[in-house]
Amino acid sequence: MKTIIEPFKIKTVEPIRFTTREERERVLTEAGYNLFNIHSDDVLIDLLTDSGTAAMSAKQWAGIMEGDEAYAGSRSFYRFERVIKEITGFRHIIPTHQGRAAERILFGIVGGEGKSIPNNTHFDTTRANVEMSRAEAVDLPVPEGHIPSLVADFKGNMDLKALEALILRLGPARIPLCMLTVTNNSNGGQPVSMENIRRTAELCHAHGIPLFLDACRFAENAYFIKLREAGYKDRPIKEIVAEMFSYADGCTMSAKKDALVNIGGFLAVNDDALAQKARNILVVTEGFPTYGGLAGHDLEAIAQGLEEILDEHYLKYRIRMVAYAGNHLTRTGVPIVQPPGGHAIYIDAKAFLPHIPPHQYPGQALACEIYLHGGIRTCEIGSVMFGKTDPGSGEFRAANMELVRLAFPRRVYTQSHMDYVLECIREIFEKREALRGMKIVWEPEVLRHFTARFKPL
Ligand SMILES: Cc1ncc(COP(=O)(O)O)c(C=O)c1O
Figure 1 (cartoon, helix red, strand yellow):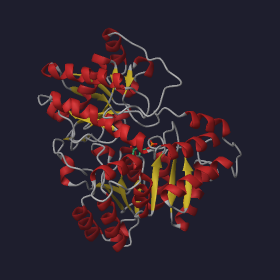
Figure 2: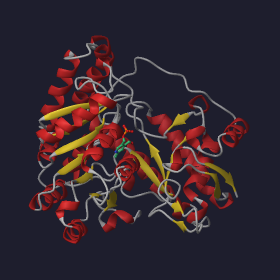
Figure 3: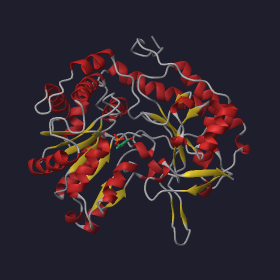
Figure 4: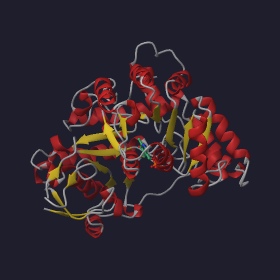
């Protein structure tokens, strides 16, 4: 059979609320044209993020009832630990309330003034946690990763030449660890090849630098390796995942992605001394080491979700659903980051709206119009998120790309929801000349995209 179907049936439904364009205009004005500020009841289809938005399975909900809420030594922790050890092979598994908590603990220990942390591309919270420790966050994606229209298999890869140059320039003592984000969320959700993971590890290890994976979407990355990299077509996904982790010395993970849960995360490391330091911080700021910042039932749901994510029927459906959206938009002429990534489609807002310059935030303008036109919430990943305006000189520094991300929650929306989204984007594309840019009227000191307020020009 050629038709790919959702590999599940629906047991519980949640109604979605339809609004009029007039209502959405009011909502958006009150929200300062920031989609993070609107109530989810005013959203019809929510593609703001794939993080924490998955539909849990019957077995996960059953696990919620099974959860052991003991303060210390919870049975659910031992299941969580066993499943993660089996998947990653790491020695120490430290639960945290979400991915950024694992990042804060890790960089709180290894970061600090004068240090540099290279990554294929830091996610915004990773960058913020590195910088909060006063270390420098360095993005080293391969050059083809910066060309949205270019079709290549592994545009999420690390630029190994640039990494080597950085190590030689700074010296390994200033690089406490190197990260690889799989898939590369801030760079189009593009996968990283096994060869690139292995070679990054070899280069780092030759200089005594540990390699950590930012492993939120490890299973989606592994499926791309199976589809695209020579020698992996017939390998079971579990083996591919095990090989990916075998090159690394640890990982941070937001379980809100590929563990199919609504909250949770972990830090996993091999280094005993690092694990001890991490647990010391954990017990002060997150919780006792057998629950981190989580309830026993969350640990149970994560363990179950991590087993479900490795189902190849699921991964095939997941990757094909995103490709379906991407291929449809490409055929209509809508410029997107090519090829479609693992968890999201990224519209190239710079090419979609060439008449709006980066300092007028074309991504924000497009995301707002997608909401106004179809009640669909998306997310700008461009100069609002990564650009900067110097408060003194007023000088504007644009991001590398101006993207609008349509992130697909796992197991939540059906094919007809997707068709509605595609129709909405198509209609906006036909009248794109009418769209106007945005200006920021207020912004906070860090992570401005979450709370900044805008006005249309
Ligand atoms: C690549 C990547 N790293 C880290 C994080 C942070 O995880 P969390 O939102 O659970 O703190 C995210 C979340 O979106 C992510 O996509």
